[in-house]
Image 1 (cartoon, one colour):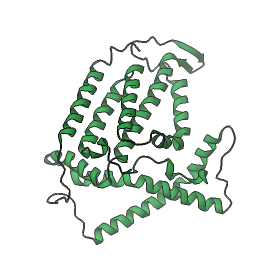
Image 2 (cartoon, one colour; image 1 turned 90 degrees about the vertical axis):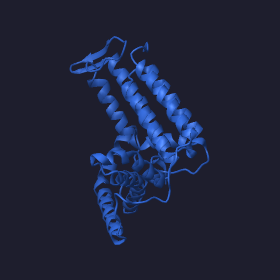
Image 3 (cartoon, rainbow, N blue to C red; image 1 turned 120 degrees about the vertical axis):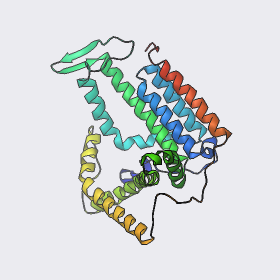
Image 4 (cartoon, rainbow, N blue to C red; image 1 turned 135 degrees about the horizontal axis):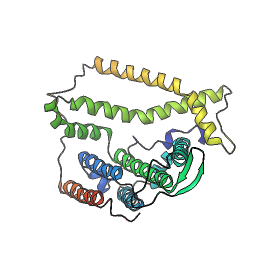
Length: 285
């Protein structure tokens, strides 16, 4: 049955109730911290900086009392794609990337294939970045309810309303898209089980089972997207039947307020990110 359980591998979009200090933070604080650390991840290409950022991400997961193994379980469904992208970077991007403060030495060459120290570093840094962003994005949704995410995103985007940016609509779209992730995973389980009950081969074995699993999942794209469109249409009709109108002059039952812990969290992370970005060219490797 484990071969049919896709929902248990989806960590983004699942809320885990708790009383940790991360759970108690304002949703706007968590979003701002996520953006700050994502900026540091994007601008740092050294091993040292990314290891520090990965350690910080793991520390935040521990503070939130969210099982680390639960979040890392979300990597399993995308392992074939990660392996494919890593192989492409390793074999064909040897001359396009040169790591900071490190010479680009050719390790192996055959025709157009170049494996260099730069391509090896690019693969390692890309994997570290993926893990960091996975931990942070999962942590945001694991410690924040969908309602809090909607209110927090709308509050952050509200100042842009003077420029014509529809803050409420954008926050609603983003929240619905995030909420659809576990729903689509559940629907994927139902489709696979239905095909298996009709004799379709859904279990992959052998040394290249990851590639076989990816090919089998590609067949499920059409029915999965058809169901997603149907659910989206049902949601639109339900909102119209309830005379839902978004935008200005809407009031919220829940009013968000920043506390001392929120200001401290934003300040500490802001200083940390500024230091990492300012010193990104000073790391030895």
